[in-house]
Length: 226
Ligand SMILES: *Cc1c(COP(=O)(O)O)cnc(C)c1O
Image 1 (spheres, rainbow, N blue to C red):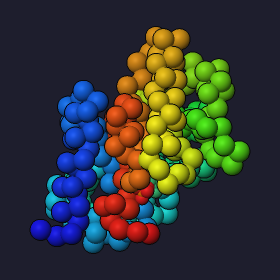
Image 2: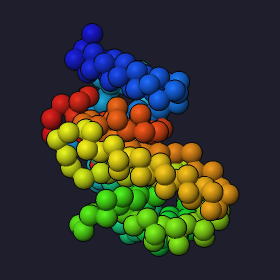
Image 3: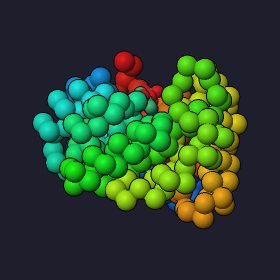
Image 4: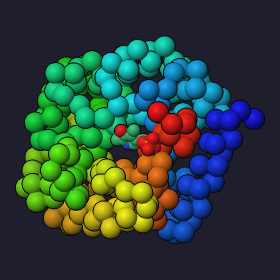
């Protein structure tokens, strides 16, 4: 078995164990293999080991890598996206995890109409309200979300967050719980289901799953340090 195949198996086992601890089936948690900065050879190795879902965070890297790899692979865009780059990347990725403003969601909706795409989006929340971080503040999202749920082309599937950097994964727990609680509140207020919770990275994905993550974004523990 290749190193990547072995690490992938270990990560899958850890995902499954954390899902069971939270009373869910392992299949209820999707693993996005974050391949940003890593070359196509390593992506192919992960694909050979059965991984289909990959995440990239830069538009230029998407344009270079995605068309050169197997069409069987599925791609999620996980980085900050500027409106002027939406048209390039929209046809390449099925979901966008970091939609951090109403105007970006509206631009994506319009361009998705023109390009004939139906992207899934996660609204990024700055749960800890850190000064230099992208994402909606909670109250701002409560005010903004209504019209976003009515956009015809983009499907708002849930929320995403990146908690403050911390050495101890337990430090992320309250932020993940806050995202879940906000989701529950938005569902109650809008009557629209928001099943997706994109939270958890290499250092804290198990805690995120215990707090309800439906999709974890894992890079370095699979592909190595960047
Ligand atoms: C890079 C990145 C990840 C993966 O981070 P690792 O710590 O390498 O697992 C997850 N989410 C986002 C938004 C990222 O930019």
